[in-house]
Length: 529
Image (cartoon, rainbow, N blue to C red):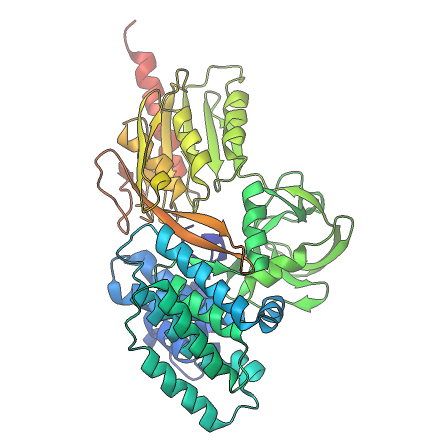
């Protein structure tokens, strides 16, 4: 995915009068024009409003991805946001509170072991650094309000200061092997238990610190989020069939799935969701908001919403049903052409694209060209992305992958004897990332498609979701990097389009692509036979 907080659909966008109002609310008495976006982010970080600060740093990075100071600030706030979310997860904390020291040590050992053996870059998965970062994570936890309320309310100040002092000494330990790391963890857990911090809580914070220090895409997944990740991959879940975005601190519908309960209830893109079952929505907890829309099939959820462009709110009651979260939308245009928009890559994506191509090729007139829209696509699963690229490539290298694991070192080739031969234009933007960049890069690298739009995100890495046996939940871990036939990775830089076209009202990027295909089609028709 492009941004670990979510793709562009979940990012806050501050523009126009709403932005000025937001500034006035956050910074009372300040002159809006004197406060830069960076000043806002820094002020929010100082106030420990991690999600909002991270969102603004993400906006800044979209303009300059090579700013090392910005990226470090973004990662710092992302790390603290993930920690506060983890510490507020009641079901997870209940499990951890019941763990024995042996179970907690096993949890820590399993997570560190998988990081050491599976992370793509061996030199970055350095055990002394991972151990040190785990202690830093525990220090951060001691500063979090929710942690203080749950575990430190009755702790004597001297006991807490003593723990911090011992943590400082342990930070100087040169840990050479996993056995030594586990032995030191036991000492840390014993010390923390003196002020009644449970061993499981200590072990998980230390393990999460190791994960969070690698990159912004590697992290521990609590059981509920691990289940969500697996559900998203399968593309089926029970709910009402909408995606939400946060715009100026408020939730709006970004997409309504076809043939879903939400579509039947006439909810539409741009509608503002005000309340769910009578409860207000927290803009800092998008995962919890989406969770409230899900439930058992046959149950109902009440939505208070404001239709796009309307002044008055409405209420609708929608039955939860099994929803197929389709990843592809498509349509014919111009009589001779097709448009396919891939929103993300999941298990069903390859078959969805095949079905779209088959349907478009049944038009009365032969299909002369295709627009493949990958804008806003944060990536997803590699396998279906490879399959989609192969639909358009008769032969050639799709992508190189490399990492620590043997199976991570691959050269993926296209061997399609019956590919689609028509002209292809691929639309990309700054949110096109990961698996979506594999498709765009492969078609560009093999001179099979023209790329139009803005430079892609430049993620250049592949994450795997790993189930844990001795710990609740799982891991999302960067297991491979990728590059194209030149063997030069583009991580952090992005793919440059063949035609740079800025986004704007009335979709000038798609309009440019349509005009290009029409011109190419006329040129072919004008050629002498």
